[in-house]
Length: 189
Image (cartoon, rainbow, N blue to C red):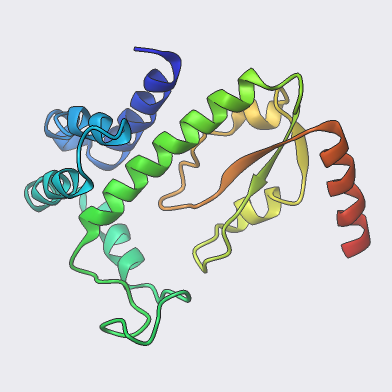
């Protein structure tokens, strides 16, 4: 297993341990197909079916399951009027969110590994949030600052974000980009 595969697997395990501690053995059986899908060797439809079957049989502990359902019931500002019901993601398919979480966490782990390799060239990292109405205030506040990749801020921060369904991610910046970011931030203040 190379470094990127290992990071993706660690992200997958973190989600399972947090969301499905009582069903971890069943959750771990999703990894081979998830890994093959990320490598492009397995269709998304097959992986979706596996996650759907898993979620039907193994609900997360009640508060966590409620968080999945509440997320889906949250009005989606990017949805079209053609959606049914308008502006709301279907509350009956929280397994899709689990799959999305796993794939997003894996992508974030790969991105972090790439940024670490290029840290001499782009040593400044910033947190970027997706303003989709589900942004955590802590992540939003952190997105206004730059920190070196080797700072305490990044050593203490779990990536991908441990907050349920948070869409924050990191962006690496060169010295020049960091200087521009700081000067633009000063103009906006």
